[in-house]
Image 1 (cartoon, rainbow, N blue to C red):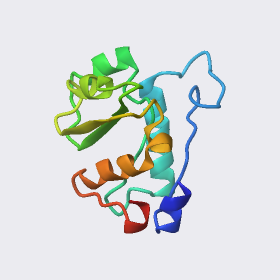
Image 2: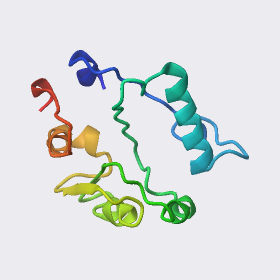
Image 3: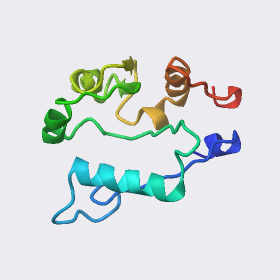
Length: 140
């Protein structure tokens, strides 16, 4: 994230409730609620008013019941999945198959679960092949 910020990107790190270091509430810990809260945050700050907004998430494809519901109306926006060989492998790709019509993805050889932290060069290379997205030269 610091490297992206230095390269001119506006970087915001969210910890939605029930994920990461936040408390796990009794209610509201479902994909629909979390997505609505993130959408509200984006709208409140006007982050999407100029069009494109890149969103990066971790373990976003693992909510099975919500994914079954999502598959009823697959996403048409480009979706990139990156899995580590020794982590989730191609599970993210398989998970997104019924959920998105414009999928791009890869498995990073020799990498574990945290691809961005463990293999940042390979992560940047994958972003560079993602439609309409180029990583600044200093991050490659």
